[in-house]
Length: 77
View (spheres, rainbow, N blue to C red):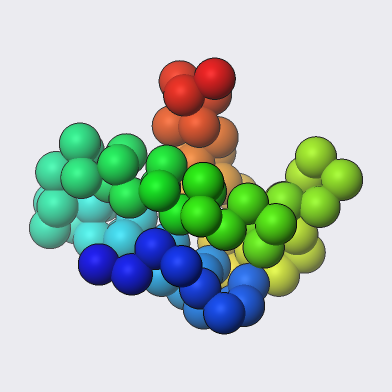
């Protein structure tokens, strides 16, 4: 499972696939939470700019997926 990415597009695409797999009951909730936290920790500078998601991440993931990521990351803080 890759958690370090070269660019924003690859990272966003990976998150998108993982979240969609979760919504289709392909992986369980604990695995999704662990993955999102690891990706955030390892690629914070690719995911955020000025305390907001980067434009590429917003466009690739959409509002529903970003809301889910926000809920997971808020638990962490």
